[in-house]
Image 1 (cartoon, rainbow, N blue to C red):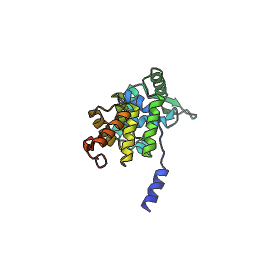
Image 2 (image 1 turned 180 degrees about the vertical axis):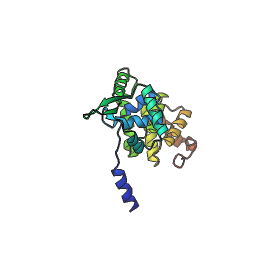
Image 3 (image 1 turned 45 degrees about the vertical axis):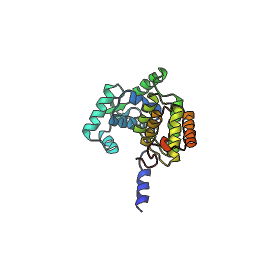
Image 4 (image 1 turned 90 degrees about the vertical axis):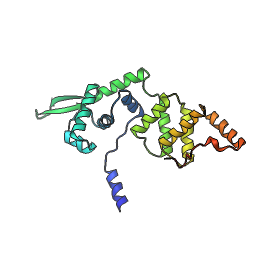
Length: 215
């Protein structure tokens, strides 16, 4: 009964979607978590939408201070604008607009600053293996791996290692990548060579910690 009510509650809520390149662009602009959440919320709304302060507070669970700070951040970065417009009855209404964010995003894509389709495919691989959508924090972790010079192929190899061991969290994968870096492993072929050598030497030192049970 509880599970049924929970599912009904979830299904009655709005579900927001966001492209990976939007998340990376937002990260490059150094948006804090609340500002990113507000941006995603607004991007999933209508252009030039009426600024319904109370509805945003209710939908996002922000405090008034958090909402005002997030709005201020987006305005400072020229992502968001609020204007006063008359409706059909001649009454002034506040309208909120984030269309300028798309201009910023297009500019960054043209400059090559935002993830390519190859990066997006990497996120897709993680979401397929995990069976769920990645969180903004998880996108950030994967981006950090890429920016630190870890190849996409090696990241996918670590992902498969984790899934094989029944673990589907990025902290576990991060430990695998860290361990491989200590061993000088840079390519998936290096993993195979190291594993084969370990089997030949009957030496278990390759697994210096219990990946399966490490949380």
